Image: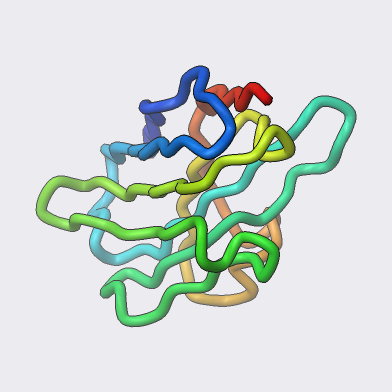
Length: 124
């Protein structure tokens, strides 16, 4: 059984920054790809970024490139999402997820385990 726990969300003004973290337990973390998704009220879950098990490959949603950066620390079983220049439209619940293989990491069905999410609210 895998547990994923996100942290770092909160309320921030537009233009500010946040760093989300997700700690994993229950699996050999370094063997799995990880991703971040977000879901705003009334909207579908949206891909944010993904990273391979070795950090050699990262993928960020085109609309978020240049502002959002994914990284991981396998020694600490953590994956991070650095978010800069935040906008009100970035307001959502952010989820981390674990994928068994590096395949179509931009779609939610590629992931087997999900965290409970952390709320990010950006005020204008």
